[in-house]
Image (cartoon, rainbow over all chains, first blue to last red; front, side, top):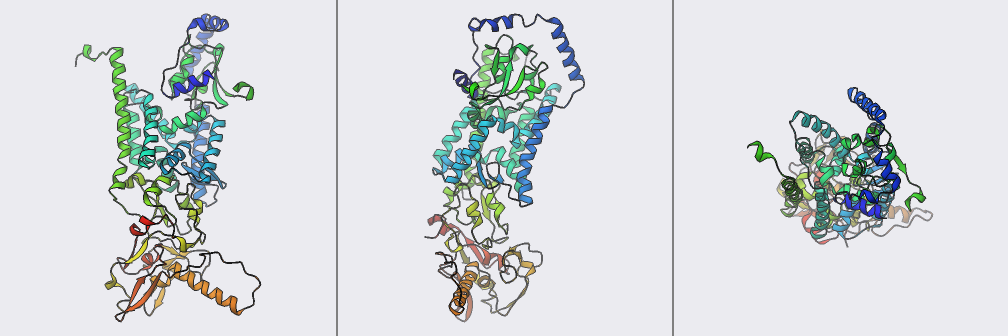
Length: 325
Length: 280
């Protein structure tokens, strides 16, 4: 339970807590102590990493993820154009083969603004809640959200520009996302309008793809420009309330990225590619308090770290009922 | 700026980051609130799909998914853009371009709505309350002028569709593919879905009373419109379109009117200000 509490605290913007080394189990202390003893092994890893950097291979998981993301979003479009009623609606709410599904944040906004919930919305919300709880919560972000995909492309450009000194990565306090989530909850209750939907790049992009582009895409473009020139992945990291909503769902999910200290040589490759590097604080040298650690709720399960890790210290884990206790 | 001035202490950096984050939060909130401007200023007045609640409630309840758009057989429903502010992604009908002619029969958009923004209590066109037709320039009306109409109602290039039951009971066809030849133009009355439905019901009643038919399915309440919606009335010798109590504001008369601009237009302001998406 304390693990979940800590995971939620970090999700809400808190800095990951450091456990004093003295409180580590003895075997973990031993493990940290002898981490860099095997010089040959470390040299081999460095050679491997240099080779990897010299001829870049496509990231396996990223390719699969993009394929899934494209497939889900295109299924809306194909279903509409062929009129096959397989997946009707948009990402905010839809019907899969007739069965209701509702985006959790959109449903929350509607419930708070309208102050009345029809049974179809309850069905849709519960279905989606169970689905994303099983799949990991913020998994929605990296595997389905169309803004995540375009933001990843913008991020590639951003990193190149930063290298050349043409762009900067201004960081923000992660608590701003929590504040914004609260702001939009309060605005929905007080104004009686679903205020967040006006600016949700997820909704705007999903509708633009299905029903045709519009003026609203300018807002999405501005967000991307801001991310390219001023702050890496700013919307997903510091602002998007959808991410936080799904983060709550994923806090107790059986699907996590799993860290194994014995395999880790603290190269830091994972943190370089991570959208939410604070969840990977445990991989820093001398930080892991246990031999194996589940990565926290803010993790979007994009699995780039799994691809990036040269020593297989990060893997996918699906916890059984026993592990949850 | 000298190099020395540029170097910040950790505390200063933290302070700047904090202020930046406040600015981000306030900025994003501010931008989102800009969406209130078109709504409060009533920049646009939209004809909403059948069953739409009071405008404020409708904007609150709509989850902006467009499922109503997808089921409409005549593609009458469109989703509003960012220029509608908080109304972004909310469905509306431009009845001059494509009106709702109820060719889905069962109010498919209402059935499709996952949040009840289109009220689920209604099942038939006569229960709908989208607005009310208004004759805005009777002096231009062909019927008032005593003129007939021959040809395509809105020209050859007009993409709008209507269901003509005598041609195809189930599939709407282009208005352009259905030319008229009328001695006195009565297109607005002739194509009114409420009027068509009243005629059909009367015919059915007649058949039932004359022919011997084994038990037919019981008609549901309101399946047949209880009130007429529009008629041509002789006013001082001129046949004038008059809107009656049964008008639901579907907009077909506005769409079919061959005069440019249309003699009849939809007004959703009055009726929807009082009803809850349905006629009671």
